[in-house]
Length: 150
Image (cartoon, rainbow, N blue to C red; front, top):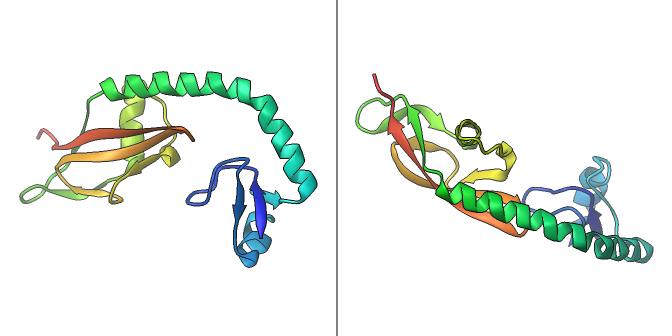
């Protein structure tokens, strides 16, 4: 079943992408939730025209995302966390914590666009996260989890 996405869907595609999904997933979830529409020939023509008109505006958005990416690469984030025996954390550090730390540093990024490799962090040390600023601008962001000063 071919669908046109109306918004970004995690692990499926971005807004205005034409994707192929199983009929049950499209009919029972994506279409009723308003995340997609059927990709009929007329809908594909309308989509192509809209994408052509949006291409010029899109270039400006991509440039802004690339500027934000360069400012992110200059940041050095250290997230303090309570530590137990050795380097094990009480709890964990997640993408929400990283998004909050970035907000304190002046970079407001929605937590759903921050993805820590391996899920959540349970020990101190250096880690990497993938931050998606735009469908074409993705930043590998190194950060460090350190022991909280007592």
